[in-house]
Image 1 (cartoon, helix red, strand yellow):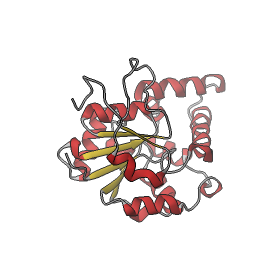
Image 2 (image 1 turned 90 degrees about the vertical axis):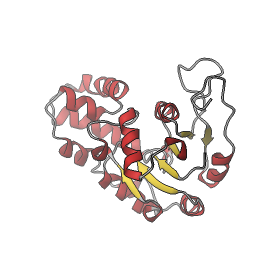
Image 3 (image 1 turned 135 degrees about the vertical axis):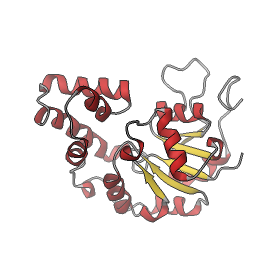
Amino acid sequence: MPITTLFIDLDDTLYPASSGLWTVLRGRIGQFMVERLGIPPAEADHLRRVYFETYGTALRGLELHHALDREEFLAYVHDVDLRAYVGPDPVLRAALLADPHKKFIFTNADTNHASRVTAILGVRDCFAGIVDTNAMYPHCKPERASLERALAISGETDPRHCVLIDDLPHNVRAAREFGMFGILFGASPQVPGAAEGEIGADAVLHDWSRLGEALIKPLPRTAGSPSD
């Protein structure tokens, strides 16, 4: 099947995890839980991790179990001086412009955060649109419904024409199970908890300048993998 559309994650994917930005955002989630929801500091970080692992995002868990204004949460968490952590990335821009496929940001953050980050990186005009937490609501990655929503927004009808590039193995695995080509950014292709020898990604990408190579040189799949 020919590839026509790329869905690309935002945080720790379009910019490197070494920037420290996501660490700051994660800390602000904990601060919100303490300051706005009254959760004891000793419990906040543990609860954040539990909600993330159970629901895909801390926000979804907080919505389900606490009285929460999602717009207030998103504004608070993303109220950060982004330029202290990320800047223009000419290598990323060149790679995205050289790739001929239609591209969408696909993020569990909101459009405002995605727009700010991509503007600072210098790649906002490389994307046809943004599939954000509000577009997916009440779902989020890695839920199948979030992937279905992304497909609908992009105008695609067949996931086999699509690629997900993401730094989280469980998001890549969900995309592959849905029928997409899954590229794991900046990590091993082995999904934690997978059976020995099972590949959790179709390809890995550590350097945006090698995007084209990742798209045309998939890793070998084992028998019984989603595309077999």
